[in-house]
Image 1 (cartoon, helix red, strand yellow):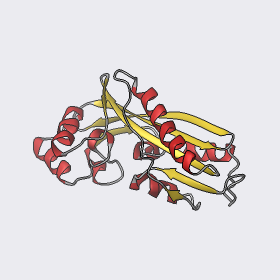
Image 2 (cartoon, rainbow, N blue to C red; image 1 turned 180 degrees about the horizontal axis):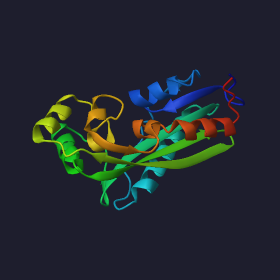
Image 3 (cartoon, rainbow, N blue to C red; image 1 turned 45 degrees about the vertical axis):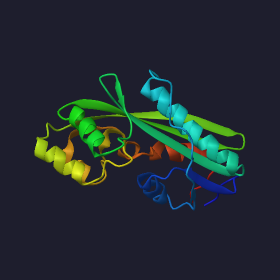
Length: 194
């Protein structure tokens, strides 16, 4: 493997799911917390917000590691025009998941790769339908704690798999890092995988 003109690959995220997905490529990389504000102007469409936040994260880390190729990502859930981010506590997680049960929603994942002379930002979208969960099922899932740090209050890669009736889209994107898009972008930047 060869990182092309870059000294290292950096993931601008503290997400364990994103780290696990990137691990799967077998490339050496560093994880750095982006430490940026995740605030966006109220009313910003979620697909624009995730693109802006992914780029903000990638650029913030790139400013600290200017010889690196930096990956930034962000996610938001959209239900009937309402945007859902990461719930702050158990009550918020239950409310978010409760609003999704029995309904179909969109999840938008922003991805940005930044390096010297290279910037690409894209957005992936997927549609998910949550089963009409009983209050007991809803409380049971929230009690797992999987909602922590997850837009919409769920994870599709763990026990959350059992709460969905239908999943349409790139599962890796739903988990937080659209791998097909990412590998294409890394190749465009000059990364050689083999």
